[in-house]
Length: 302
Image (cartoon, rainbow, N blue to C red):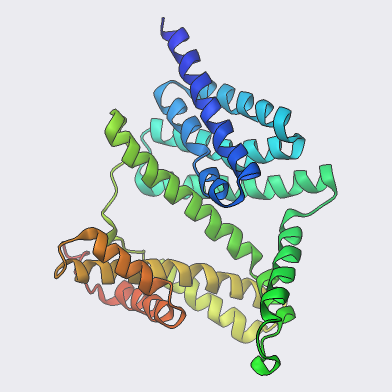
C-alpha cells in the first residue's frame, strides 16, 4: 500500500515537473517564471518518501521532456532544476539547519549550472552563456538605436562588463534559486503538514561580519589588480557582497517601516520599489554594511 502510494505521488509530481519545465519552452514569459518551480515537486517527493523516489521522478520527468523537446532540454531539466530539488529534499529530510540548507544547496546549484554549461557545450557545441550574451547584445543595440547618439552609451562596454561578472551572476542566480524555492516550499509545507527548518523573519536577517572582509578584499583586488585576473576576481567578489548587503539593507528598512506601517504587503512593496531604484539600491547596500558593524536593530543583543 505504501509503495503504491509513493508511485502514484511520484507519477503526479513528475508530471507537474514536466508541465513546469515545458511551459518555459513553449510559453516564453509565463514559462520562465514557472520553470523556477521545477525543483519543488521533486523536493517534496524526497522529503515525504526518500531519495530514491525523488531520483526516480526526476529521471522520469527528464525522459518525458526528452520526448517532447530533445536531449538538451532533458539534460537542462535534470541538471538545471530537478537536481536542486533532490538536494534540497535530502538536506531538509536530514534536519539540516536553515543556513546549512541554503549554503549546501547554493553550492549544489552552482555546480549543477556549471555541469549543465559543460554538457550542453559538449553536446551542441554551444556555450549557453555566450549565446545569451549575443542575444542580449542584439537586444541592447536595438534599444539604443532609438536613443540620441550623444547619449554616450556603449553596448560593447556593457557586454564586456557582463562578461567579466558572469561568475558572480551564476553565484547570485544559484543563491536566489535556493532561497526562493526554500521560502515557497516552506509556505506550501505549512499548509500540507511538512516541517521545514525554522528561519528568522526577513526583518531580522543579518549577515555575519566576515562578509564585510570579503567586501573589502574585493575592493582591494579591483584597486590593485585593475583588468588582470585578480582584478576580475575582485569585481565578482564586489558584485556578490554588494547584493548580499543590499538584501541586508532592505531588511533594515523593512524592520523600521514595519514599526509604523501595519500592512506587511505595503511594507514589502515599498522595500522592493526602493531596491529596484539604481541610486537607492546603492544606499541600501551601504546601509547593510553599516548595520553589520553597528547592529542598528539590536538583533545581536537580543
